[in-house]
Amino acid sequence: MDTGTHVVMGIALGGLATLDPVVGNDPVMRQTVMVAAIIGSQAPDFDTVLKLRNNAVYIRNHRGITHSLPAILIWPFIIAGGISMLVPEVNYLHLWLWTFIAVFLHVFVDIFNAYGTQALRPITQRWVALGSINIFDPFIFLAHVVGIILWRYGFDPGYTFLAIYFVLILYYIWRFQARSKVIAHAKSLHPTATHVFISPTFRWNQWHLVIRTKEMLYVAESRNHRINFFEQYPFEPIPDDPIINAARKDANLSAFLSFSPTYRWEVESDNCQYEVRFIDLRYRTKGHYPFVAIVQLDEDLNILSSYTGWVYSEETLKRKLELSTQS
Image 1: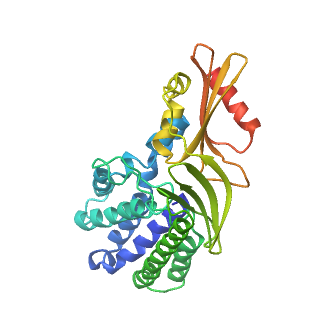
Image 2: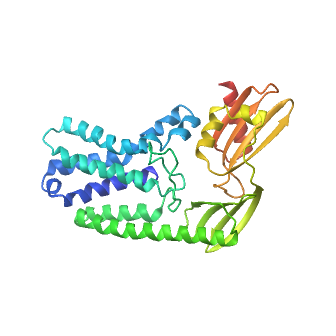
Image 3: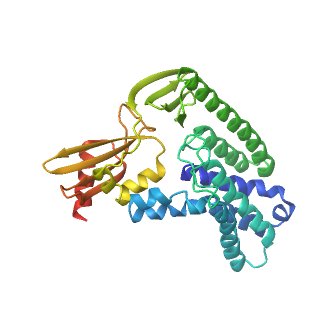
């Protein structure tokens, strides 16, 4: 989820924690648990600082080890341990428990995005992405904001957020069922489909789809229970080709391939140079595919420049490749 949603979730957990007598009956515990819950709700995303290095490092590692099974246990020890050093009179066990809930909930809700997480690492490094909740869901965010406002005007925070979370559980179940119906509909139109990649949008009844068969890739959209097809491309596995093999040594393309499950690729040559382009098909926006990886090579297959990330125009991409060449 987005940062704002994780913040209000942390506040909500601080309110929910007042149902715990150890927390609710101690003003110091209430304050420290609130701080721990807010930090814990953000902690797995501390790897966002990797953006300061480059997109390749960020894409390859974001929502990776910081969202893993060991991290879910380690983050609470770091956060609760640091707070208990500053406030030694707190009940460490209950502080750790609510911090753990905050961290766990962060990772859990991220699984429902199309981006996903490596939440089962180190058992497997496979990305777990259920694709039923948008990265920012207005209903989830506003439900938390309403709870915070009610708390501000005197409602009991524990029971208020308990009720809200019950509603949100039902909401998640509904969204997952809606996703399953869209996938079933897509497979009914293409019974030979081997994969259906689905991404939720800002609107409840609109979903991005990529349907893959053994021969073709179909880019489509489900809107109001109707599937509209846009483009189709031959499904071509990456060939054992000298130009592409040279490009795959580049960190940007390697990061793209570690993350994207469905894409098309193309190779162009011009003035004794080659350009290898991989295009993620999941995020079609107004006829454009903004998530790409580009590698430019000379005639001897030396890498000249590369980029991976989100671009919405060829002019912007050209500037980013020029910066890559200069660096």
